[in-house]
Image 1: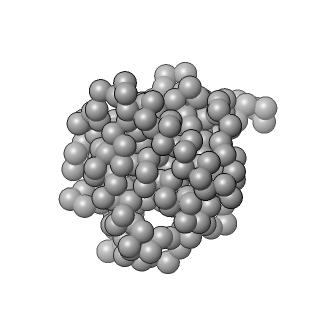
Image 2 (image 1 turned 120 degrees about the horizontal axis):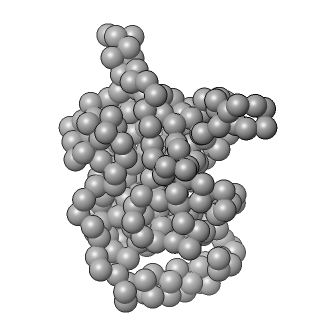
Length: 241
């Protein structure tokens, strides 16, 4: 894994990212038109039958939780994007060997250390390139609409998926194609030394042309598959009614 330049060294970051993207573009076949596959239950709630490429997707997690559970789910999505992906954060604590458990090949992962305006710029540059299958930007708070629109336009240009990972906050307007809430659930391992498969309570809060719902979801590393243990969508809709 190549070292990333310091977030304070903008010229070096610019040069390194552009060089990396240029190398990828020379061998890039172009973005795949098919959506990113998930599992049948989730795909049935999405208008394209999977996670749409060429746009932003908002992943939020409860403010009382650390980002770990949502990070795992984000790794699953990036691992299924089908190419080189970028992980952009002020302090990227993503551990490539650990993310490999979620199907994200470390050889296809580029970590970028950047914050503030530099992080937004890096995300925009990556999303604009057709060589990048996807990119994640870790945030401490929601973006303003102008910044989101710029990232959405960049994703539409490049054709990859853009993930915004942040703590849940008061509902605010946004341009993301989908908004998810990812909460951790305890594993079902056989002992305290065996945590079992990662599990989440996943809520699709908003989706253009889709059907919001709630699921209890697990990830089987051995099978490389997302599995729905329980579809709680009907119950959640009754509570909101």
